[in-house]
Image (cartoon, rainbow, N blue to C red; front, side, top):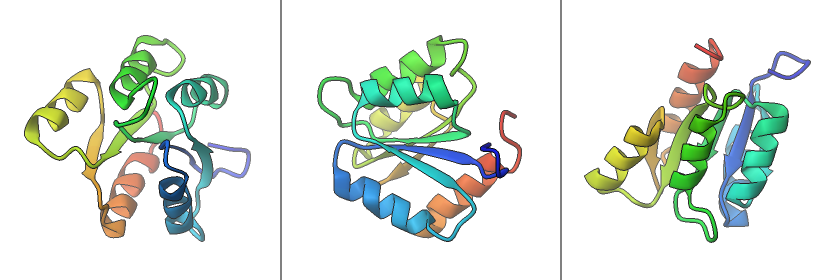
Length: 129
């Protein structure tokens, strides 16, 4: 949480429009939203800020979301951050792979805003648990 007791949400998607959309959906909600457009950038932010939750796309260039997730889980400082995958990959194998690596949830695109709000509320009521 930030100094205003707002949960910090890191949104990671290489498509700027998707980041802006999620930030707009969270406007007026009680979250601090940080945007990232690459896996490497997201890992740096996560290490520095340790957000309460990360909304992570899978299909990104250079470092995909699976690798980002694996690196988050292998790092002592970031291993307990709640990570929700938001991806257009919707088959069972993709979902299973993300969950096996350590995702805490999985939403498919196009995303239903009510599902996003529900999962954020679930994971930010008691950050770190």
